[in-house]
Amino acid sequence: MMIQERAKKVTGKQPPRAPTVMIVDDQPEILVSLRRVFRDERYELVTFSSPMEALEWMRTHPVDLVIADERMPDMRGSDLLEKIRENSPRTIRVILTGYPGSATVGYGLAHGIDWLISKPWNDDALRITLRQLLEDGVNRPPASAAPESSFEEPDLAEFCERVPVALHCLGPDGVVRWVNRAELDLLGYSRDELVGRPVARIHADPASIREVLERLERREAVRHCPVRLLRKDGRTLDALLDADPHWSGGRLEYARCVTRPVEEPVGKSVPHRSE
Image (cartoon, rainbow, N blue to C red):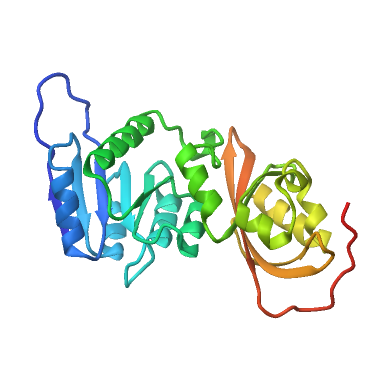
C-alpha cells in the first residue's frame, strides 16, 4: 500500500520541484512514525509497505531519496536499493535497520548504499541527516561522472570498519585502497601489509583476479566469483568475491568488494611465503 503526502507550503522562493522522499517498510507502525517525523519537511513524502509496489511506482515517478527497511518478507532492503541504483543511479539510497552489525547490511554497504539509519532513531538527528543528504544530492553528478566516494564519510567509514563481513576497495590498477577489520582478521595481515599493495599478492590464482579486474573495466558487476586467497600464515582460503565498479569521467575509479569464505576447500593448499 502506498501513501503520499505533500509537504506543507512555505513562504519565499520555491524550487521548481520539491524533492521526493520514498520510505519502504513492511511494518505499518514504522511508516506512521516516520510520516510524523517528516510531516513538516519541505518535500513530497511517499510510503510503501511493499518493495515491488515501490519499484513499480518509481517507473513513472522521479525519486530523490529512498529509505528502505533491511528485513522485509518480500525483498531485502539492500537488494531493493541495488535495483534502484541500477534503474535510477542518482537516487540517494538509505538503509533502515535494527541490526546495524549484520552481514547483510555490510553486504549492502559494499554495493552502493549511501547511508545507514539505525533503529531506534533520534527524530531531530534523522531530520537533519535527510536534509543534508538531499542538499548534497542537489549537485550530485550522474553516476558516469560521480567522484570517488568509497568509504570517506566518517560515520560510514566507522560502520564499515565494524561490520562482520569482509570488505575492501580496489583501485583501477588492482591496488588495495581500503580494507576493513573483518578482512584483515580473515587473512591475518595488518592494514599496512595490504593497503597500497597489489591485490594479486593475496590471490593464489592470478588468472582469477585478472578476470575480475577485466570484468570491472567492462563495467560488469562481479557476483559469486570463486577465488583462492593466500593467508599470511601460508594457508589458502577458498572464497566467493563480489565486486561493484564505480566510474568517473568515463573510466573506472574504484570497486567495492565483498569476500565471503566458503566452508569446504575445493583443492589442495598452495604454499605461500609471506614477505
